[in-house]
Length: 135
Image (cartoon, rainbow, N blue to C red):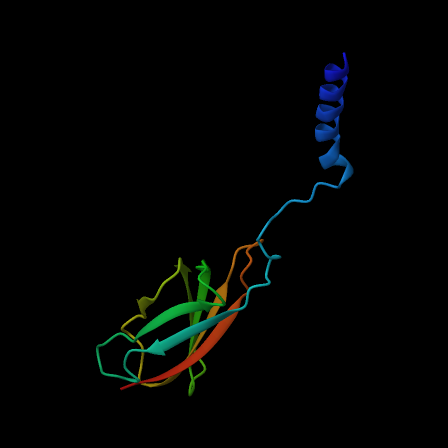
């Protein structure tokens, strides 16, 4: 009888203990939007020749070994005329090379690249501005 009572008390204590101590979950995930990112981009050729499309490399550096993924908005603006066009690309990590359209007229251009993460992601949004010249 004594052994049965001890076994029942022990099992009841093991069942009630996590509830009484306030069961906290052990998670290593930081809060949403708490990991800083830095968009890095570079034009392959600063001066783009006639009938060539401007190309640039893009990547997102994070504070650790995580891979940020999301949507990238690319805004290209001619400095002289102010004409702009916007395109969207998906980014899934690593270094990617993107090509713009070939039919850009001569002039100097400013490219604004904005990286947006999905809602609830631990990574922050970031942006980068690069310049090139079309001959």
